[in-house]
Length: 361
Image (tube, rainbow, N blue to C red):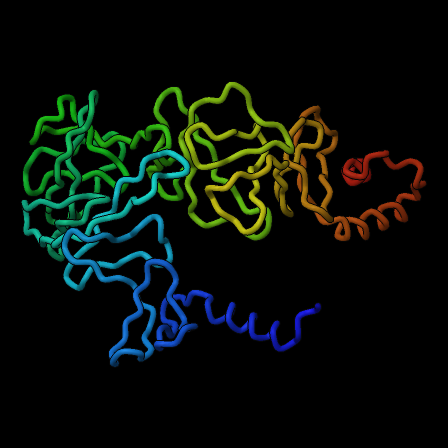
């Protein structure tokens, strides 16, 4: 027996009513099919029993969870006056369940007072002061020490300059540099040095003084979406050197220190919906108008669809050309053909060599 239209409509209505409600949506109501909130949200109502409410994020007190990795869109937030001290996420994929930050009372420090930089936020500096991270030893593990609040300097010290010293006006390194001392002793001076990342750490960062990988590791560029622009500012990741690299069409990525890595000249493209932790496919990198192209080299960068690679005259083996729009070049080619009375069969077989051949003296 075929189900009646009324029965189908009723089932659809019940299923729709049971769909969880996102943050800010109406919930509750005391009926059998009252809307419920998505996981990790509370239904907050100001009325009596059976009244509707609003799906709201949980509000955590001191020591409570915040920035919960399991609930990126519905994570609990700290109460007013508290700060979220983020959790340290291990460099493994997928990460363990239950990772979350902790709500802490935020201390505001004066000159010489403690501050924790850059991840821990339980102490911050007063306005007009900067938090200077603790110096780290040249060898051995860095001690877990808070930074110190200092007056904002007129200028910061670049790579190779002297830093530290334990005074209120000690020289401070430029952003993203470490003050590395010989011993790591408190109050010792050091040298401003580029940060060195372990496996799983960042590299090729989108700002000055980018971190580099420790010896024995390689910096792997971030995965990119197969459709649409790449995320702005995405850093690379330090990974262990693979036994072999992945050719065109192979699987790549995965956001771990041992993820498969594409051969040189290839991009790891992730199909939609884009997730930087998802695996992608090794694909030849394409160049836009004005970019370099190298048609005679394996895994070289080809031009995007609708463009051709124009080589110099005379072309050199392994040399680079420039990607140009074909419709821009055709009028020039026709004009040159007419002015020089050249026959079509005299043109080089490869269209990318036609323009320099026609332009040569």
